[in-house]
Every structure is written in structure tokens, then in C-alpha cells.
Length: 638
Figure 1 (cartoon, one colour):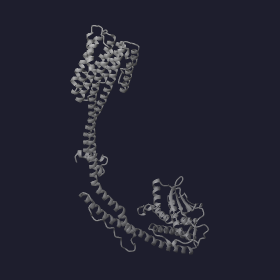
Figure 2: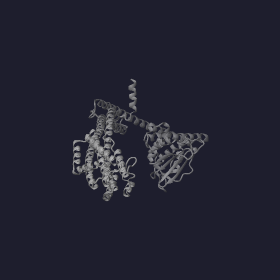
Figure 3: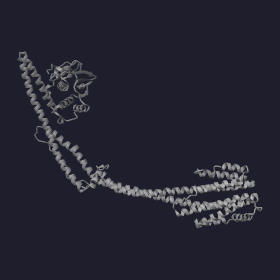
Figure 4: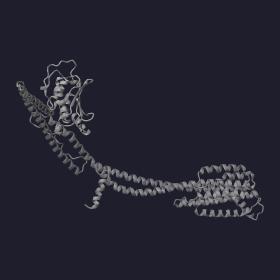
């Protein structure tokens, strides 16, 4: 394998989802999809830039139109103020109304970047009201208008030729309108004063030259309809009258007296300025419409590329889902069938084996397997896999049946062995008892007692085999009742180191006779376990007390104790959650106790003893306890 292939395989293992078929199909389709998305993303980024530029251009055009609206109002305010300072007192009321319109336009424009050119507007207005300098007032308005026009008429075309021409035409017409407004304002003061002052004629000539240049530039950038609108505005009666009055002013450049009604000049020029502003608004509307078209086109292009990206993702996801389903659905059907075999069919086969008549000598027939039907919608490889799984099913069912039969035979063997040992031990105990009754030598009698005790322990082990095999012992059950202390003493008598067991603190209680054998066996197993796992010099204590309708016993040792995990597993064995066939031999006592507790309906639990060691708690239900005052039917021989 080449290093490149090795690296790719290593990278694939590190890829999330590579361990599943669905994840692998998704990864395989994701690679070309990501490449397409990268290309689409680049196009989207480019279109997003165009869209942002178009939106910015649209906003700039709106800003320019708002500035021109403010400039138009300031131009009129400048002319009225210049006329008032020239002596035309009839402009007082018109000037106040015009100031209000200027303030409205200023508010509509919003904040201005950098230094506000109108920050001294209030002071200049106060100067006009007090009869200040006409030239200084005129210069303030002119500079403010120039600053506003210059800072808000930057290139807003965004690379579009039609919009660029419209903005150039709008800028040129704005300069021409400003020139006309300057001429209106300056000559309004001159006509009110009756003559030109020093340098006023030169300023008048420069304004006329600027207007001519601006109109020429407009003619180059404007459309035919826009030029026609301008020609119409310059051909009105007021425009011609203003031109005649302008010629009369031009002829008075030598300082001669001018007998011109300033109000007539103002009205005529105001109509001309308004008409020019109307043309200017029309050109601005054309520019705004073009900017809107660019913004809409950029929006549609951006939406189209985004839609293309989503379409690519949707198609890739659909392909991944369809491809994965074509593989995972048949595999899922196979997995469900395998789960059915593991969870139902094998269990039913084992149950049939276990329920078969043990004395018939014949094993139960395993459940038949399903026929080799093809999996719907599967490929050839999956069909082959289904056939292989069915072969595995047949083999597994056969093995499960054999294992179940083996376990049943094991249990039966244990039961038979237990019965044989029990029978021999019963005969042995009978012989020992006969010898004890005939022996008069104390030493020999003591040895016979030890032999009797040993045989009793052996009998308990044989009974444990029967308990594990599920066999009951009706022979040792009798009617009547026995005290709980006698039951404990019977259990102590069946352990090797019985001298180490202390049974002083046991509250009085009586136990039903049919439960005595199982309870004694249970306690013997717990006491034996406590003795084995504690030092020989340490006693094992047994306590008993009533708890409402139940009776509790505790076998306490001060031995080595158990860890939390081992204690949990031991309690699981006591609760019957594990099979004794999988347990180590040294832990069979837990399963014996669990089986006996289940017979009695009791609960057994191991808990850590205060300090060191383990305490086994046994909770006996009311069903195994005798009613107080019941007299035992006969003496119990343990």
C-alpha cells in the first residue's frame, strides 16, 4: 500500500461518522459537495460585495438628494437675508418662514460627518436680524453650501455607467443651480442697494461664468429627456425676465445707479431656481431609480447564488439519504432478524429444552429457522450476507439447544449427586447416633460427637447441591413452630467453628415449622461465610429483633470486608440476578442463600460493618413467622 493510500485511510478513520455506512456515504458525497460549495461561496461573496455596494450607492443617492433639498432651502434663505441686509424690509416675514423650512430640511438630513458647516447658523441669523455685514453673511451661506455639496457629491455610481452619468448630470446641475442662486442672492442685495459695491461686480461675473460651465457639463452627461427638461425651465417667462434684468445689471459694472425693483428680480429668479431644482429632482429621481435597479439586481443575484448553494446541499443530502437507505434498510432488516433470533428464538428454544420431560430421555426439537427469502430492496452482496446470517442462526439454535440440554443435565446430575450423598449421610448419621448411645468411654464419645458434627456439615453441603439444582426437601419440614433462637442454634451447629459464634442478643420469636429447615440452612451459610473471612480470634455475632410485622436477623463479622464493586456483585447474587453455573466455586454459597431467600420470601443484603467487616441482614416476612401464643406441635430435632 502506498504512503498516500495509508494516509487517506488514516484520515478516514479520524473522520466523524466513518464507522457507519451512512457516515461513509455522507463523507464520500460531502467531498465534491464541499468543493462545489466553495466555488459557490466565492461567487456568493462576490455577489454579496456587489449587493453591499449597490445598497451603499442607493443610500448615497438618497443622501445627495437630501443634501440638495437642504442646499435649496439655504439658497433661498441666503437670498432673502441678503435682500433684507440690502434694505428690502418686505423680506422680513418671508425670511422667518424660510428659516423654518431650512431647519426642517436640516433635521431630515440627520447627522453630518466631520465638522458641521452650519454650526454658526444661529449666530449668523442673529447678525442678519441686527443688520450685520451683508458680505460676511453671504460668504457664510456660500461656504456652507459649498461644503455640503462637496462632501456629499462624491462618486456614488458604483461602477455603473448610466448611474455615473446621472450623478455627473446631477452634480453639474447642482453647481448651475448654486450659481443661479448665488446670482439671485447677490443681485438681490445690489438691486436693493441701487448699485454694485467694491468687488461685487467681479463676483457677479465669476458666478455667471461658473453657471455657463456647469450647464455645459450638464449637457455632456445628461440624457436627451433631461436636457429637454432644462431647456424648458430656461425658456419660461420668468427666466427670460431674469435674463433681461441680468443684462441690465451687467451694464452697470461701472458703478452707475440701478433702478431695478428687487422684489421683481427675486420673484423671477426664485421661479427660475425652483424650476432648476425641479429639473434637479427629476435627475435625482432617475439616479435613484437606477440605484434601486442595481440594488434589486444585486439582491436577486445574491439570492440566486444562495439558492444554488442550498440546492447543492439539498441534492447532496438527498443523494446521501437515498444511498444510505438503500444500504441501511436491508441491513436494518437483517439486524432486526438477528435480534429476534438472539432475543426470542434462541430463548424459546432453550425454554423448550428446559421444559422437556427430564425422564423421557429425548431432547426437545429446536425451533425451525426461516426460509432463505431475499431481503426486499437489497443488493446481491446483502442477499449473500442474509444467507450467511441464516446459516449462523441454524448453528446458533443448535448450539443453544445443546447448551440448554447440557445445563439441564448438569442440574440433574447435581440433584442426583446431592440425593445420593444425602441418603448416605442420613445412614451415616444414624450409625453415629447408635454408636453414641452405646459408647461409655468419654474420649471415644467426644470423637463420635466430632464425627457427628462433621457429618452434619457434609449433609448441609449435600442439601446445598439440591438447592442449586432446584430441589425441595419435604422430608425435613414439619407442622408446628420453633423459636428463632433454636433455629439460630441449629444453624450454628452446622458450621465448623461454632464456638466463635455469639447468639446472646436475639429477641424472642417463633418460626413456622415448614420454614425452619430453609431458614436454618440460610443462616448456616451466612455464618460459615462470616467465620471464613474473619480472623480466628474474632467472634461472629448474631442478632435478632422485630420490625413491625417482620423479623430481622444480622450476622456481623469484623473481618477483611469487601470493596464496593465486590459488595454490589455479591448482593446481585443474593438477589438471584446471576446464574450459579457461571460463578466461581467459592461463591456458590451466595447462590444457595439467594435460592433459599426466594423460597422463604425473605430479603438478604450485605452491608459494611462499622469499622471493618461485613454484616449480612436477613428480613423475614410475616408469612414465615408464627402467631404469638401458638404451641409447637412437637419437639424439633435438628
